[in-house]
Length: 267
Image (cartoon, rainbow, N blue to C red; front, top):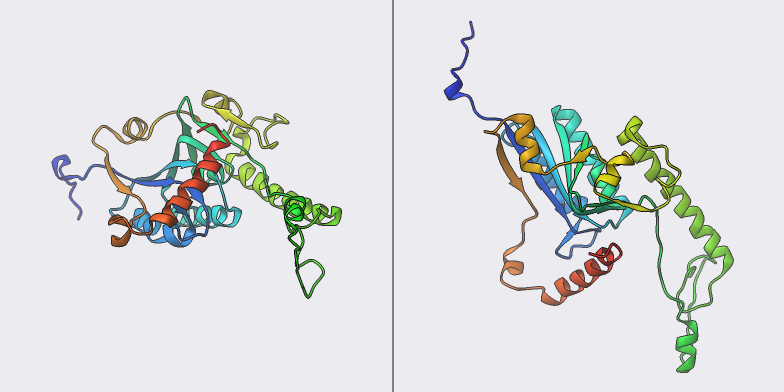
């Protein structure tokens, strides 16, 4: 026979908060988000303390398609296995791969100033063949396989290479669109602009169905789980060498790359 536990001995609901901040990449440089680096943290967040929910706090301009997909798949698998609802809260930006991550959640909440969307695929490089020519530099490339040097920035662009690239981009874009449609379902606006790579701010993203409303993690979780809800914070851990100031050059490069990604959105 089971006896009810007095309310004073019952533990308050717990929400695991996972912070996902930075460019998404497989690089091991500090400040990037990858599935291998995040895996232990995400696994702990879903398993430790029997959380009532998991909240993703996202601030990312995007990055690697594969890493975005791997991280999202891990979150959805654990949410299904543990029967835990996931909420996403966007800070400055959840664009491109950052929005891919947000779609791991059952609900997406944004700030009035959050930049959301950019559902598209981009490839950017330079054409440097004329530049090196001015300095008398000759580019020498020897390959086995006619496509091994495609899109080489030191050689004139070939239309057949561009055609192949656009085919890859279209395939990835279709996968991205399907991911968003699967996650958001009937909440999505039927606007033709939705999947053009455009972005929306705050309430406009709600109107487009990309988000469910304006809300922040602490007040929204208290609204849902009560004023006594507890928060367990999870974020990437830095090694001792990093904490003591090591890898300064590597981190400086990482910061420069982040500035480029965030700069696309005026951040």
